[in-house]
Length: 456
Image (tube, rainbow, N blue to C red; front, side, top):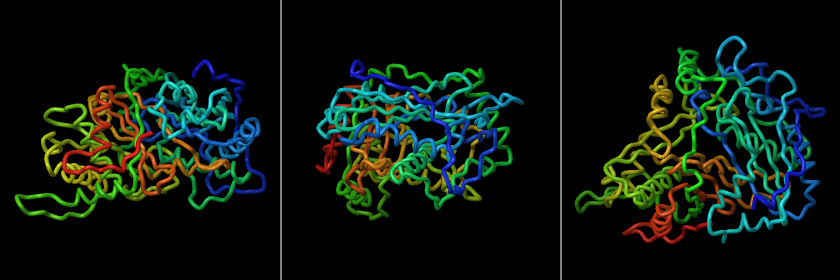
């Protein structure tokens, strides 16, 4: 497919104030000092997402609309057009909003049919094709751009690819940005937003926050301005695949997880949430596919905005998540009550995050160094981000994918295109393990016989 993609132009898109309207957010300071919740992600490769749209509208008109609306959007999301740099007074990282800023906007075209990448009957997640549709973002040395965009026209539609430096913002922030951009493009104007967008890192409270941030940077990026972005060894050899769990199957999972058996007695418990149910089921299926022995470790992200004291605004655009760690004996996951056990362990970690979300944060960087990629089952994203609701004016996306799945055991959650209560799940595994996972995930396991999973 690479031979069929032609880069026709590279624009530099600058923030432009909207005419005759005052946005609700306060202008960011020239230099935004990062919080330790930002610095934790300094080694992580950029977040890359693709959104595919079916349309027969003229591609040049689409590009003009996307560029003009992005320019207006960057006025509100000014730090997304900035650079990550070293502070002039120290070796701390800052988002440098001085100067004009700007975002690279790559325009490309292909003679291929979009349906080959979007259709439900596509046999596999096409990582080689997807990664060429995502823009390059050089995060290996400071100063580094925060954001890059690539739009590719196809027969029958187009793809919007975005790459975001993870140190600057999390997935929640990216979803807010994309929805704001889409609304601006669709309406042709910037509308007053209900929730103030803020980039103010002082809202992250901790008595030793500056010391912790510096400790993270010294541990994870000791050679800055060179940034040790984690290597993705054997990434090209991993299989990637996307599955859809319908509302019906998720409700079945919840029901199955509410009953555990003690001897001959059945004990009813509270049903798990959608997130807990699908993560528990997928975790068990990965453990089965990998034939994991003894113990398995699960990672997932918990949003801290509403959990910290005082709470942080929903409109905060920065990193505000913690990695929750769940460990379990494999025998407990694979026995008759394995689903209920997994749900309980995951929910316990969520509850613990709610009680004290920043507990032990002084040592998070040291744990990140020890927890090598591929050694855990790592869930990222959320079905609540709502990327399938990002409508630029040509309808909702026909498909949304997370490109930056570089490590064995990565599992990505999205909402779905057509099923409001469903969950899209993409993952990366070695090919032989992927086949085993598909068997367990699609067919369920002994004693269940679920049949409403779909696979792209």
